[in-house]
Length: 173
Image (cartoon, rainbow, N blue to C red):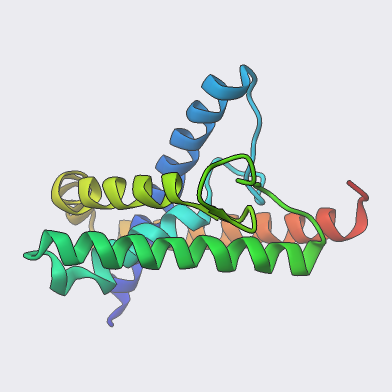
C-alpha cells in the first residue's frame, strides 16, 4: 500500500465513521427522544462504523459479484467486530457503551440479530451505492490534499482517543 492509498483509506475511515455517528445519533434520538453522544470518543464519529465500512469495501471486495456471500461474510464480520469492541471496551473501562439485552436473539447484550442484519443491509448499500459515489469525490482530491487531510484526521482522532481514555480511566461514571 502506497502513501496515497493509505491517505484515501484514512478519508474513507473518517467519512464512514462520521456517517455512522450521524445515523446512530438520529436513530437513538427517534427512540430515546433526546440527543446523546453514545460513542466512546468525543468527536462526531464512531470508529466502529469506519472499521465496518473498511471491512466491506476492502476485505470483502473479492465477493462484490456474489451478493449472498458478501451479505453473509459482511454480517458475520461486522457482528464479530461489534462483539469484540463491546467486550474490549468493557474489559478496559469496566463500562458498557451499548446493551442489547432487551432485543430478541441477543448474545450477552453485546450483539443482536436485528443489528447484525442492519449491518448487512447497510454494508450492501455501502458497497453498491454509497462507496462508488464517495470514491469519486475522494479521487478528486490532490495528493497534497489527501496527505494533509489524512494527517489532520489522524491527529484529531488520536488526540480525541487520548482524551477519551484519560476521562474514562480517571473520572468515575
